[in-house]
Amino acid sequence: MDISVVVPAYNEVESLPELTAWIKNVMQTHEFSYEVILVDDGSNDGTWEQIESLRNTDSAIRGIKFRRNYGKSAALNVGFAAANGEVVITMDADLQDSPDEIPHLYRRIKEEKLDLISGWKKKRYDPITKTVPTKLFNAATRNMSGIHNLHDFNCGLKAYRKEVVKNIEVYGEMHRYIPVIAKWAGFTKIEEQVVEHRARKYGTTKFGFSRFINGFLDLLSIFFVGKFGKRPMHFFGSMGVLSFLIGTVMALWIIGEKLYDIAYHIKIQREVTEQPLFYIALVAVILGSQLFLTGFVAELVSRSSSNRNQYQIDKEV
Image 1 (tube, rainbow, N blue to C red):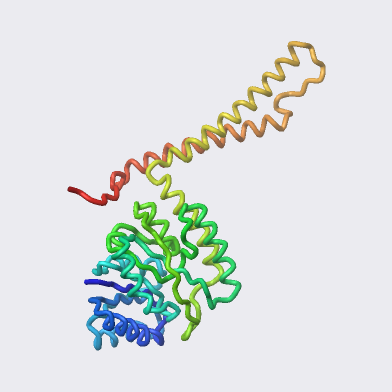
Image 2: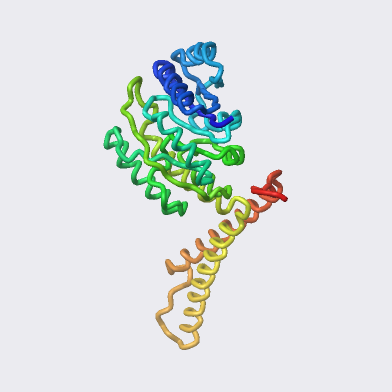
């Protein structure tokens, strides 16, 4: 099979018939073998009944229904597991992504041997309250991930080589950082493509302001897990040792200064415990010890994990 199109849907009953008809027209025009995987993320507006109806008239459509709303990341992860195509395309169900982009995305994945292509909605129809925070998060993600050639990490329209979606796990609200997850998994051939962004035709947006706060926390989480997931002692231990050494040096300095004053009969002598620097040193020593112990416990947990020695293997001969 050439292409799997994975479409998460939450209360998109109005847009699905138009979207699936559009995808079908594009696929038949370019003679692709394909499937459309519609994942109902716990909708309550008749979306699942619409999917069942569409399936009855089009054998290329497959439907998956969640019992409740789990979020876009869960829908994508389940869709990735079910996909059979050599190239997997993801797009939103709200008709803001154009299926006309699919043939070019497919050709680039196959001809340029890319792992992932992320869409860039260069011209957007979103309000400024959404575009400005998005630009800030994209800038932060570029700097933290080292993927400097992407302008829009959160674009729903993406293309993947099949091996990529079968070897990554998307959970929580990590869908906006799939290129970062793919990079940490060893899939580094990541490029960008300018795509059309269409104004929403039906319904309303499902995302609120809280997604920006969650997005920042997810970015920190994925950065830490990707870099230190298998060696947490390197992170906590190094910070703990540094804090402990700083506290120890300050404590020795205070004690040495006190002994110097006594040796040379200097009258102005403050007790060690009367100096603010003593308490700063004490906090630094305690904090350093706690960080070191945290790293030690995290290392024990990591070594006891069932996937401690699971690594991404590209080829064997």
